[in-house]
Image 1 (cartoon, rainbow, N blue to C red):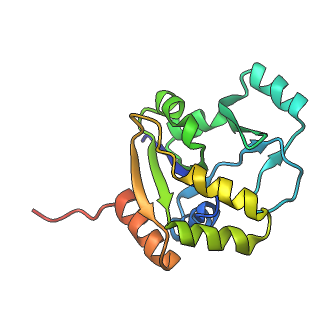
Image 2 (tube, rainbow, N blue to C red):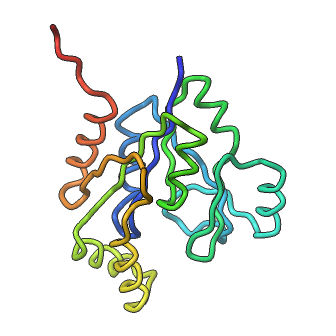
Length: 182
């Protein structure tokens, strides 16, 4: 049995972490991929492995990541063990950058990606509510949210404007479509 990697992308404030945690709670056989990030430990949002940039560079050079990228001044890596886990039949959920999607599709040809979306006013309210960005930073993030996905990216858009339960139900319906009897 072959597993699959399910990517989650979307702009800051769209609720990617909330969607991911709720999906894992709703689907017992689904697991989160723990990313390696050059971010200080314990800043919340997700469970990640915090490393210094020098260690990240050494590990990337040694081939320890099947995917890695830079965004917002930080480096992100997906452990190469994810390939083995998918080949063993595991279903894994990972937070990806939109920019890495073409490479991710090369490494994982059966990659299914959800592009989590929300209206600009929803994003603005969420970003302001979390209190991590200045008004100028929020404006920059809202502008970045308008950028299109890379050409050829295979994604399914999933709105997260309403109750999160609706978003989770829609994601589960895509992941596990009900078979219609003949």
